Amino acid sequence: MNKNDAIFEESKIYMPGGVNSPVRAFKDLDINPPVIKRGSGTYVYDEEGKEYVDFVGAWGPMILGHCDEDVVKAIQDTAKEAIAFGAPTNLELKLARHMCKTLENVDMVRMVNSGTEATMSAIKLARGYTGRDKIIKFAGCYHGHFDGFLVSAGSGVMTEGIPGSLGVPQDSIKNTLIANYNDIGSIKSIFNTCGKEIAAIIIEPVAGNMGVIPSNKEFLKELSVLCKENGTLLVFDEVMSGFRVAYRGAQSLYGVKPDLITFAKIMGGGLPSGAYGGRADIMEKLSPLGAVYQAGTMSGNPLVMAAGYATLTKLYNNQEYYSKMEELGCLLENGVKQVAKEKSINVIINRCGAMSTIFFSDLDKIENYDDAKLSNTKLYASYFKHMLTKGINLPPSQFEALFLNVKMEQCHIERFLEALRSWEPIYK
Image 1 (cartoon, rainbow, N blue to C red):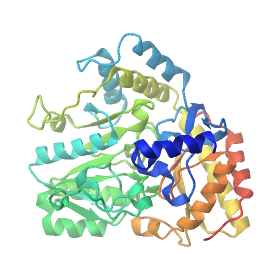
Image 2: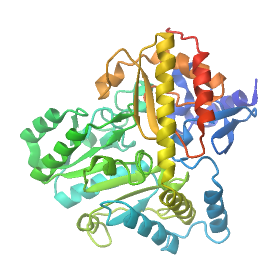
Image 3: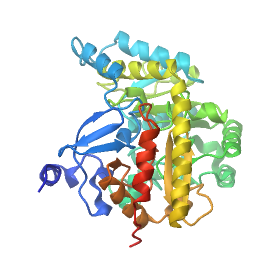
């Protein structure tokens, strides 16, 4: 038994399934996951020392590559004098000020510790601000494991085949209404029935948890208009797309201004992080200014704030990074289409900047949850296992995103395509 297998098998004794997040277990792939020991730039290395070109990037945060020298230095310098205080620090001011001054439509922010915490807190704030209880989410969008969101969720819930989740009382989801992504008619139908009861609509403007599915521009614009007409807050979940599809996130690509925005992943430089922000009149409803209570001992943690500030300032000052990743994304997309054509495999590639998904599907396009669910997951598993043996680290689920980072070069895309060309598809 190699080191990877030995560690993973022992992990099963002490952690459910051997993991601390379900999709890492490779449950439906019939193989054990590599146990990652270290990362450097575009590469990660397992306990056996095997090198992988990493297209997962810690599920999105590592846009600067693993162990970026500036982020590491910021963490090291901060750790010499500050690890945690549970008190105001200049570091949290620096990051908050930077976000408010460089992002669109963000007057104030509240730091939290994860994307789940950011989205659930934003919804609580929306309910407190509007005095309403109901929310709308979209089938296939995953906003974290808060009870009220675990209805028609994507990502790991799709991969594991869980119809929602056990342990979620009906009372926790009775105020969650489900609409169809990219279908404005489904929203109008809900508003016609109970429009004045809806506190917020939460949406991933570029969905990444049923595979990458960008919103249609007209759909988002009509969604914004409907929210304004009904006094409903529009919440953009940019946990994945924020600082990823563009520095200012998806809202800068669509020209639609949400009332609240949630962030995580990239904004912490790889450390546990999250934030939500938006208009001042809404944010001022938060305690201690207002009556909406939300707190966290580790919110604004010095190490996280230092890593986040180093990451965001580097991205902001080097926005040519986004052009580079767009070029590499195009190269990857076109290369995959060519290889798929050579192998007579039907694929659809949905991409927005530095995030994409290769769907193994016979459809003409994939625009929503129902489309995504028709993908050939058995073929994806064959592709994934082959690519892993060739040293290409990919998300172990058809319904996740592939991420690029700024350290990647054309040679890494070519290595991906070379591995793909050597694949002999297995359909069972």
